[in-house]
Length: 333
Image (cartoon, rainbow, N blue to C red; front, side, top):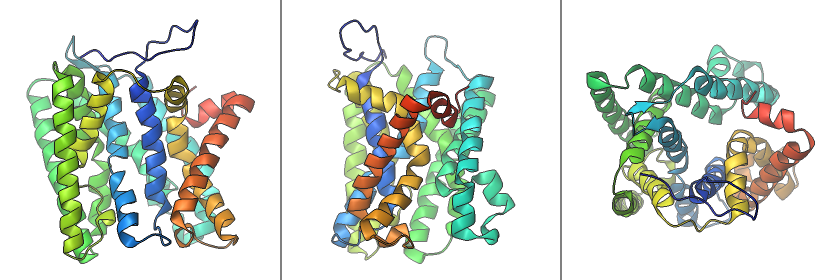
């Protein structure tokens, strides 16, 4: 399925899909809303809607990687050493950047082998999960091995949803959420590659989106009726079809994304994802007027808006003033 290309300024020869890159920017800002935490100034249902509405964002990033790396003409994955090295370099650099934050917030007790291997800040799991996913797809990319990987991926999804629900209802079992979450990139990357080969994506994408949205809404309403917070669910049953549907719509629909937005998403979405926690800490202090306050205690909506602005401004300033540093932060040599 060939994606429709973006409109570009006069004189530009850019042929990327602007919808996809614009959606990358939305997803990056959506991730910030998840990591802000609580929205104490809003009614509980409003905070739940905000956080639940953006659970598709991280799966979307995995799917997008799969979409770009799968070659439907040759039915093979274009996964190279460099494709693996980029997230690894980004992980190492980001872990070094966030090490002082870890030391300041957790002290010596927080500096463990787990944090050194899994990342010095909680959101860096995405990069290790991406590396695991790419290694798995590269190793089991054809024939019976690929079919087995799809079966394993289905088990990952069912387990992730089940453990997530178990944690929400019992407030226990979170230690099991972490390892299964780290494997969740595998099914999402596979789905992204599958989308690349769908012939009638313009028909399939709205169906996926509709199913995903409907199921997610039903899940949220059911959980609320049972007296638990939908926002605490790590993966809804409808999350993956919703993310796949959004990506499919971006691929197959007419390009309606402004050029500036698509360029911002293309160039800066990874930097926004990786370094937004620093902006959240700053924004929480500014909004609350208290340098000692934890980010979860500040008004969430104001923190989300300010942190988004600060993160985007920060990565753009680095791109202009220190371009080599900026590219190094993304793992680019």
